[in-house]
Image (cartoon, rainbow, N blue to C red; front, side):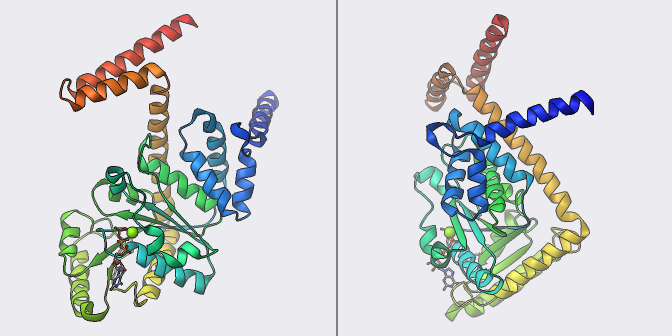
Length: 360
Ligand SMILES: Nc1nc2c(ncn2[C@@H]2O[C@H](COP(=O)(O)OP(=O)(O)OP(=O)(O)O)[C@@H](O)[C@H]2O)c(=O)[nH]1
Ligand SMILES: [Mg+2]
């Protein structure tokens, strides 16, 4: 080892010092955040997430250190994605599952909700806490909308960061709620162990699922709202969904995705859903599939962070910010094509960089 070892030690101790240094604006050091989170302080976890989501340059180093520490000791966990059309009962079902898991297993639950519609409306997650009355008030849960607005580098990398923090904070079960429209669903598949589609009868939902290719990627379907007058319809829809699932290759080796009848209102099927999720976890852990999946997910995580970092570097000067705003306006009003605008921005960045490099 010799000199190399000494250098490593020196580098490590510099990092150590930085981690223990309080961040700007009188905040905690990275180590203090992580210790607080690990000790079960949910308000520190919430603050750490805000810090990691922050685009403020002053927060970047502390945020990176927090993430690094969390990723080193990720903790055992099951990450479940819950998708489905708006109003299918995703939040209600997560709440029912939460009640079941906390009451029967005494395990902590984190819920991260991604709401792509808020990007348009600018609103916050649509009453998610009111749809999760149990989890919103339980000491053993943590509910948090993931940011969708103004995130440089996209929802995916932010949500992954949030997952890493929740895992490190000892949340054995992490649920990601996402509206099953378009891209959010595809990206959620890339960050969860189990993807549950919440479907309802009478909307052609099961067929919509097939059309969008969702069926190919889900690990299970929960046919929700099987209560009252709707029970019979839900039973039929469940059978159709189960049949449809047989037409697709299985989502993981050795696993046949089930279609389960359930009601978030009465609790029907909640136990079965959770048992199947645990069973899936055992199968994929033992076969080594989960490890492979997580390795692949880490590669996407790397790429997303790289893209995010590059965008941050790209946009770090006032000139670039100003030009981007101007060119966005020109593209929006049809004065310039998107490609020409992107090329212009890239060439400004490139000449700035060359000037800088020339000086040094
Ligand atoms: N009868 C019945 N109603 C339900 C059930 N689950 C949810 N609901 C109702 O369906 C509506 C939508 O439920 P949510 O849990 O908010 O659905 P969601 O899929 O999370 O909705 P978004 O987040 O807006 O996409 C609410 O009025 C719930 O009370 C159920 O099992 N049975
Ligand atoms: Mg919801």
